[in-house]
Length: 273
Image (tube, rainbow, N blue to C red):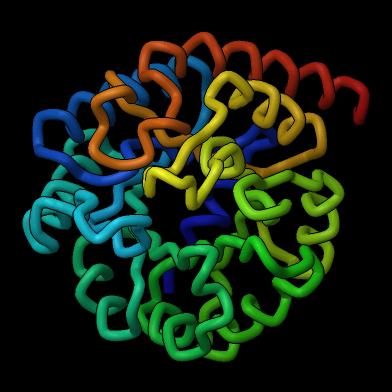
């Protein structure tokens, strides 16, 4: 049985899940992974490489969905092995769980699918760690029922992720009370998704918008409220990313942000001693 999240939470700091929204190609994925790993090693942050092998949840039919499932999964696996970090990717259907589990260390359940019992139990039965994103439509405490579905499959290597709550038709808000509430209700590490939380979904153009200038605000608040990990999508050139460019952090900003967040966490820890 996997113990991925136990390992990531061994230290008093925070861990980072970061990478591109979707795997666009081999060179890009390796470059992003190497750069972030170097930053995290220098700062003592445990790192998980993130990339979707396919984007199933898109606003428009003609939106980019991926380069091919097996090719993208092969790249994900290769990045993890080369730089020596765990790798996480989304799954969307129960039959995808076993396929993805052959290539990655953590299976992620998208927020819109967090109530799908067959998907959760299929992920549990692979024996891989499972990260469940909180639906934009449910309370923090209600995530314990999603967690219970994974535990019922004999898998206790679980984390839950806050990624905002629907506020009107095209905006999200983050209620940071949810961090300690989910830690208590779910008895699992809590991650805050600092980029998807700033999406402005379902815009009239059919392309999701965002507020990337507030990524650091969300990240600082997450660290201050005791989040165990952060989730950040990044790209060297977000304006030309093939998915979710409007709410990704530019790659060269990751290092300075992690330095500031590490300082904040150290300050908070000093008050707790």
